[in-house]
Length: 272
Ligand code: PEP
Image (cartoon, rainbow, N blue to C red):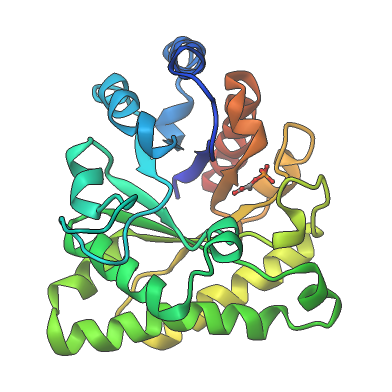
């Protein structure tokens, strides 16, 4: 199976000049190797840089994603500060991240909000990287699976709603949904769960989503949270980990590509 390695640039870089410099090094390095044959690379720049980054990546193997879309309309409207799924598509992106813990934490994204966002994304043909994960306290209290079940219920509800109101969305969800398991306590902290813990959690996620609809294909589940050049090999070696969502280490082309190489090599071995 092809691994996915996705860079979440968050609110970085601060200037267009620095975005261009990051893209220059990324494109030069990708042109020099064939990582993208086995590893699907994707980057998620900030909304303001989405169109220019998408334009530069248009004829390359690297995909572009938004970091979020509006819950209020999939197209246009009087929603100051929002950016819709249609606008994201128009800017050249083909995917969006949704439900990132920083959106849940700083923008109080609820179940209903995320249900609307997922629905808008699939309506406009965007693929979705849906982020889920527990906080440190929830992890300490052994509530990880129940927290993830609550967050995954958005998928279940979207399936129920779509079957009644928009059956074409079920097919889009089946084809274009990726789950990113990101323990909140591991994001940007340098702390990571053990590979065994991630494996057990990914198995739970895959089984839970499969239980929503037996016709869904096996769900792709990425790990995210302090993935770096030192630990990427160990995550990549697990057949339960289909790729990585990378924050800090995606802001340098060499570390981002080293992580992609780790997944490329490990997934090559799996297919031998
Ligand atoms: C993220 O924010 O999605 C993330 C995984 O960040 P980091 O790699 O910096 O922990």
